[in-house]
Length: 199
Image (cartoon, rainbow, N blue to C red):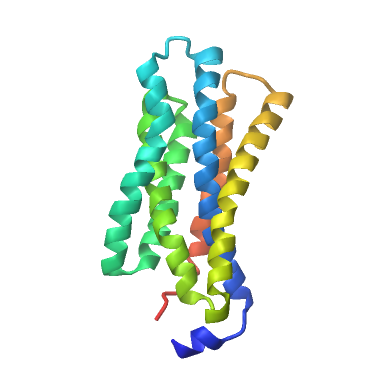
């Protein structure tokens, strides 16, 4: 452990940083997209959406984040961070893939919860994992950089949505948004499969 604290920064450290920061980025992006979905669905495709359904769409990811951060955080304290960090990205991938493939409003709400659950786990664990594997003098800086990607996720999601709407305005555009989430979470799964467990 002493060697981990004093070793110089290497490529592996930056890979850990980028992959954990992607969790922050993706969590904020999905939260932004959840808000965008409501007017898009209600105005363009599903005029029958009532206020309760709209409220569930808006809040389900946040509820999932709250539950996931508590449950996965508690489990990881007992059994180690790395397996649950991997599980978190898999849950986000599954939830986003179900939404994209099905295009179902009925599956959208539970899928948002599953994505939120995974994102909550990611939020609970990413800074701890970064803190454990980084050299001591870089720990605070790297944790700060990881958390700052949340703001980039908000901005990128809003900008990406505006770009999609400007080139193709269709009733199915909301599903295409989730293809981005599928792609990014898949990259997280692949990258995290090469992570190592901190001593």
